[in-house]
Image (cartoon, rainbow, N blue to C red; front, side):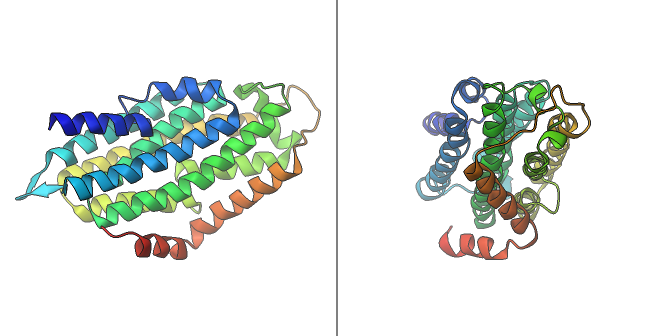
Length: 282
């Protein structure tokens, strides 16, 4: 038990799960935005991949044993709750966008842990599908952040987004799509990703899983508040300067492609989910 908990601690550090999340906000804020975008996706995906294999292949972990909740399901649920709460509530008072998205990334690690801690094939598929969706919408958000920071001498505070809806309507709309998707609102891909995570919990049944699902829904609602701060600055606040914002063409095209993928996966996700189920075996 002690040995596995120590190994799990290493995995949690990799995915920035509580209580081993403390490195993420400072690293995300201090690193170049391109590096931050990579750190927010790649290590998280790799960490969850090895966690799934370790607990399934090495430990043969299950959520229940003789009708009782197993220690791993309980520990995984507690860590998921802590990670969601720490990430979402810490993001509420952040003024640096990259630091805010760092805590958002921590919260999303908590959501993904919900699919992990049921130790089922459905949960594994939900985790993999959500990682794909998360990569698309999070990379898109960081791409817009990089584009705006480049035009404001590296300033990444929320003040630089004031009046963005009038200074660069396309960037404002694209960022809104990514933020709505990160919140988990329909008809965006983030909603479908969270749907599968919650469905894995409910399908497994039990009061504990229902409690986890309820806490996750509340945390998703909390996340809307700090994402809404950015949208309020873009559309409901007067700009501090009137100059239009232009970005590199390749960045704009890439962001548009990611936004289209976010929208398409929100209404037609079956091919991607079928690929996930056919390529992974529990």
